[in-house]
Image 1: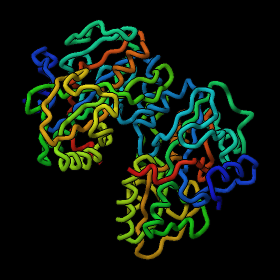
Image 2: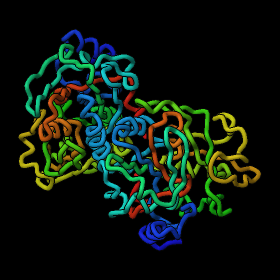
Image 3: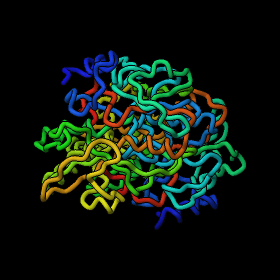
Image 4: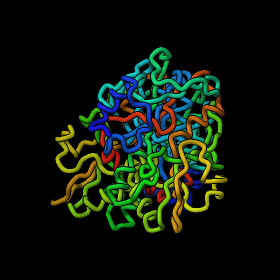
Length: 259
Length: 259
């Protein structure tokens, strides 16, 4: 637990924090990171505009600048995320703790809303978070729902995160997260996983499986890992992201993103 | 009055409709139009992302394509708007009914949400629309509120539309339009016009003045004319827009844009 987002980012910067960030700085906004060359930035911004549920844009950096303005006061996007992923031509080639040496003057960073932001609101309403109870990364799954393509970003599958709830709490979770369109908003599906192409909830594509108790319904939200799959499909020469579950944590409070 | 958006667009295409479009095809989505060369499209998309209240993006065309996909089924953006404005290097040089001869293979069109879309919801809730009662174009004003810049789109003033209401109806109008973030959402201001740099409500910068009755409060919403002012400030070599109040009308229903 960190008392502030800044403290958490400092720990990440020093290499002392390399774990997932769910629940680590309660109340602060968490964000997905995508870094692309300027040449690919328009296609990505359009991809985000056409797929707002998985890709709600919180901030876009100036070309060449690694410094945040809106989401956090002068955070350094090259060091302040616990763990990164580097893709070259769609292949994952590295998972470093720092991307200082990879930074280029034509890079543009994108911060996208993350469902960890609305988790505080869910907890405040008395809704449990199974992955936090079990101290694991929220389970994420590739679905059969296609994203809309944009330029060189080809159609690729929507990725979802899953939280199990009894039906009454699932309804409450819909009501609450609807108020947070900037951080994925309401769920995209609930109930039968196979209806959206998920074969086995016990085998997530990212993160860890969590227990689903009798009578509970799995509830699925669009997930910011989606653009990483799009990158696999579209093969930009270079693309850097956070590692799933290891988010950028900003200074703004989650409730600021409530409608 | 037209029974469908398609009928309205056909009339515009034939040059038979050159008036403003407020209330003309009740229930159908209305949109602001911005056309720019691809070279300027990233800066504009970023400007829209950073200024979502005046610039809520509904659809972005493919480079070179004048045909809509999402907002309407295969409308032609070159002919289906009643009246256009053509800006060269920030100067208004023409106000044609058709831009077929100006179209270029590097043009990208943007459709932005318009407050005419939520007017149906306001009327359904029993709230009057003064400009429709008086059969004029809604009054629009340049404010002292700056937009956030993006690339070559320099900071420029927010433009607002104004509708007067008694206080109780003003509150109701806030509640209703909050539900429509894709078409400007809740107001940006209510009450004292001078607080946002408007000197005289009787002299709008676009559209027509409307009567404000005793006890009524002017309520101000962000307006899609805002990017036209940004163009004046930023001087792209060419930019084509709709003429204020003369919107693109799509096949989708306004209520589809409700949260």
